[in-house]
Image 1 (cartoon, rainbow, N blue to C red):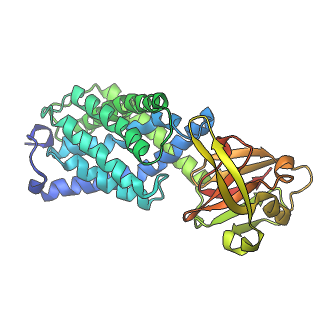
Image 2 (cartoon, rainbow, N blue to C red):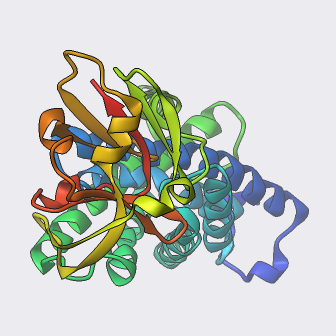
Image 3 (cartoon, rainbow, N blue to C red):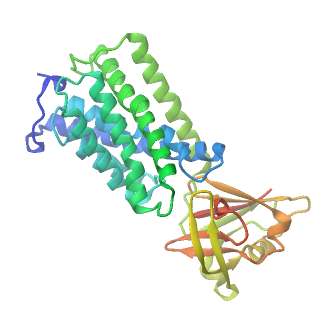
Length: 343
């Protein structure tokens, strides 16, 4: 029988065909998920928050383990697909770094659990699995990064991710599988959808992914993490490297106070942005400084304020650089800084 009819079994019985399906879905899903991550950051920018709103697209990340679970039909196939997809996304320069391996594996595990409840692969199994798997990423990130974030905000993000997982994850995977079946490319007799609905699902996926690819190509900075490009309306554009400025360090005491995150006052040592801009030489008429992260997130400062303030620093943050802005909202403290752009 085809993948849609098989009763879940162990991973040890995966055939060569099953492994090929897993590898193909992981490769395509990992590459496209990297772009979706950048599209999520674009959503955050439109809403005006550093993270959270992009969860509305989270369901697109779980389509691939859902397809693997349905096509392979063996328990563990979704987890394996998720882990491999995470590795591809990491190598493609995804926004979350190596942590995405854990996030994707957990999502795949929840897909396996959810889909095992209905071997006939009916729509409700896809919807349940997509919802829970997509929401799980919020709790994994909460455990790793979001200390101090109010529980209510975490639940809102999980709700957005779950809703996305239901529509853009479970429903989309179900109808994509139906479209593949109608085209004769997959044997899934229990998966049914009207032709119009299946084409609509595929069209929505292409629109979202095209947006992510465009945003990725527009903002992604393939520079090394230790370099910041100083550009825009300046006389002398250059690449800032921290080690070249070691003799000009300053120290400030500052607290990060954001809408959802608070870090108590502590010392930060770095290079004043004022000194960096002095070397670049802003052109007459320039009014704004944009600090942009490698993933596209950005913060804007009045240029006149920054050039007269030595409390805005570029500091080391592990292997990357970070903008610390004493006296400014926490949303303007940009992590993984890639560019300082004068406009």
